[in-house]
Length: 138
Image 1: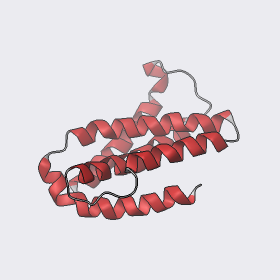
Image 2: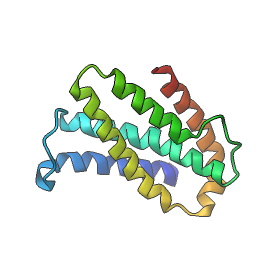
Image 3: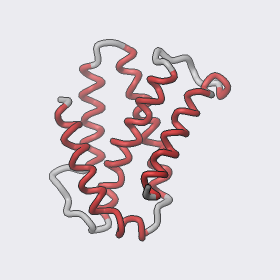
Image 4: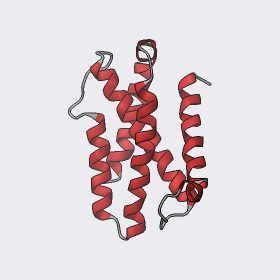
């Protein structure tokens, strides 16, 4: 298991733990169960984190830029999904998606130059799969 996979699994655990301790931490009540909150945060970690890493690889010159920044693709997905949400519970889920993405962004900032050099080809492959998923949910 690579260090990147370990980091993502670690962040997923943090997301789940933060949901479990939500009452202790004084967060507002939610229409989503703790499990739904954690699952949605995990999606934010994977899709948002993948987009952030992809854009970092482009910015560092390891990947040729596409038509649109990856983070913009995710933001567009969130906006479309919120607009088509059938109820408040569905709309609220994107708050937790963003929380997961914000959490992983903090970790991505800490990655050193060697990470980008060693992993951008794999990040490109993963992002291409994520982009297909996000675009198929239009």
